[in-house]
Amino acid sequence: MPDRIAHHNRLAWNRQSAAGSRWAEPVTSEQVAAARRGEFEVILTPTRPVPPQWLGPLAGARVLCLASGGGQQAPLLAAAGARVTSYDLSDIQLAKDALVAGRDGLALSCLQGDMSALPFDDACFDLVFNPVSVCFVPEVRVVWRECARVLRPGGRLLSGFLNPAFYLFDADEADQNGRLVVANRLPYREDAPDHLPTGRRAEVAGGDAMEFSHTLADLLGGQTAAGLAIVDLYEDGWGEGSEQPLDAFMASFLATLAVKGS
Image 1 (cartoon, rainbow, N blue to C red):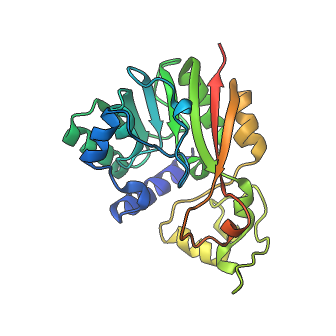
Image 2: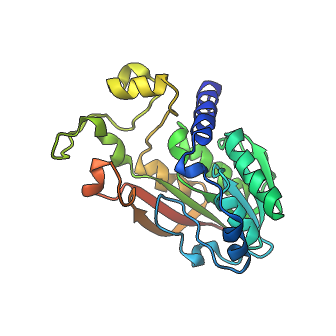
């Protein structure tokens, strides 16, 4: 990812984490204790729990939590017996993973960096757990290639991402009946402010993270081109009480389970 975008998005996520985002609320010691008993749920998308069979055996597994800092998924996977590395662009999000690990005695290491360039050896992880986050990088195929590289043969990539159709619309322009009109050309990019809707331009200039849509060819075909076979998927929405008008018409999120070939 270009340094300018990575720097902007790191600061944006640091601010969001410090402000108490729903993605930055650490799990409790009680939740960690339950995970040690095998009683836990993790999410790749806003509401739907990951099917347990997607995770496979966790005891002793080497797991990379990719761009999923915030003290949520990584600590629970570590409590369930995995050897977890949390790798995130935001130092404040990583600090929340470290806080839970220190508080509850978890074997969890934290490392800061860009998901487009992973500082790990080839074939060193059994599972990569990547909640919704590739919308913050301009080139998603690079991320999939890096995930495939660090996975051992037979290893799994679990990833959540936005349906590209989400970016066709400007939610701020919905009428009083919640109807939306097509507002953006796809693929959508926020590193060119002159092309953004006025309201969104002000939000990005004010510190919101830059977002990027990707084609389905890149989100799905990019995984298969990297040597990963997609074996399952599901859809999800923003959840009860969502203010997103598009929720009335479609599920905005996809999650995929992909396996690296031998």
